[in-house]
Each structure stands twice: as C-alpha cells, then as structure tokens.
Image (cartoon, rainbow, N blue to C red):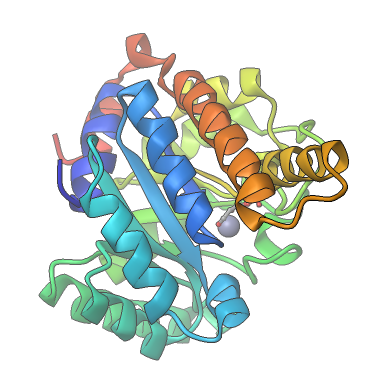
Length: 292
Ligand code: G3H
Ligand code: ZN
C-alpha cells in the first residue's frame, strides 16, 4: 500500500466514528516503529514531523525524505504530515517534498490576520492536493490554546473553518502538550458541541496526557485525528535505558535504539486498538464532518 492522501485516512475514520493515530517522528526509528505497529494492527496511520523536530535536525529534507520512503514501503495506508508549522516557507518545502498534509499555525496573529494567512496557505496547499489542518486560538505549544484551561468556542470554530476552508481543526478541550501523566480532564460535552457545529474532522493535540479510556470516549464524542508524541518518546527512552543498563559495555547503537523501536511498535499497535474501539458510535455529525 503506497503513501496515501491524509484525507483518505482521516475522512473514512470520521465517517465511521473511529480515531486515527497521528504519531510524531523524530528519529528514523520512530517512523519504522510506527509503521511496524500500524501493520501489526492492520490500521492506517499518520506519520508527522513537527517544526521543532525540523529545528533539531537543522533541515526538513533528510528526515522528511526518509519518512516518506518508510511510508511508501508500508503494507498499510500511511500519510505523512507536517506538524505545528508556523512558517509558510516550511509548509511550501513539505508540499514540494511530497508530504500529504500540513498543520499551519498562525494563531499568534490577530484573528483577521490569522484567517487571511491560513486561507492563503490553504489555497496554495489545495492547489497542490495537500490537506490542511489549522488551529484556532493562541499558541499551540506547551502553553496557550492547549493549556489545560483553554477552550475552543464552537461558534468561533465554525466561523474560522468557513472563512479559511481548512480540512481539519485542532481544538482545545482540556489537553496540554508534553504531559508525563495520563490524567488530563477532557471536556466531553465541548467535544460533542464542536462535533455538532464544525463541519470538518477535529484534531486532539497533547494526547499523551489522556488515559486510554478517555481517548476512546473522546473519539466517541467526535474526535478523529489523535496526536501522540511524548508518550511514545517515553516508551522509546525507557526501553533504550533498560537495554543500556542491561549491558554496560554495549557500544553498538543498534542495540538500544532497536530496543526502543520494538517497544514503540508494540505500543502503537496497542494505541491503535484503543482508538479503533469506537466503530459502533458513528453518527450523522461524523458523516457530515467527512463530507459523507
Ligand atoms: O502535535 C503533536 C501532539 O499534539 C503531541 O502532543 O507530545 O503531548 O502527545 P504530546
Ligand atoms: Zn500538538
């Protein structure tokens, strides 16, 4: 199964009331692990690379090209997404490389400028057949719109989607980025209200802080794309640390990176089961959100 469009992964899931796992790639081993985990689950998946990860590598092309190659060789549908980009230039580079979608975040700008900038990026991406996720509100980092107290207003969200023409919207419903405990208190009533009022699939950011049970409930109430990064990094690092502790004379990086990769693959398979466990809850509003 080749690299597929992000809409081809997200829209069927939104119609069916299922969640889609969107997992962050930092090293090549993340991409290999996430795809191996998705293949074991028999589920589609989204590989995403954030602007912060690009900054770490110093450029998008090397890690982006490698991630696209892993996606093209997968046995399940895989989309490749640019995550949390504040730069139209980086978005253009991702489009040129063959990424199937981008998240563009102009939320630090005043509302009208945010709409104008997002709409312009959306138009350029759509001309290239690339799906666009946006975020409404404040900065989508560790604070701002994804601070635990931040909330997206359903009316404003609907107006933002209408004005920009984006394909999906990241919303603030109680999560916060980079949590190390899985005890975020989600506002399920707000998720349902957003699902009813916003005509595109909804994206949950900061999902590392959400317990399995609440991930399932969030999908049941209308979330579709579920972004998870920190949790997998913790799984990776724990396994690598254990491998290093078990052999203090080890020098081959494949020993501990391979252990991390295997642990992440297993956890991705498990998480995709958690997100998929909601097929019975498809609703008319999910179908509307996916244009079905
Ligand atoms: O965009 C990526 C995510 O929102 C990941 O957040 O590291 O808290 O799972 P997380
Ligand atoms: Zn995020």
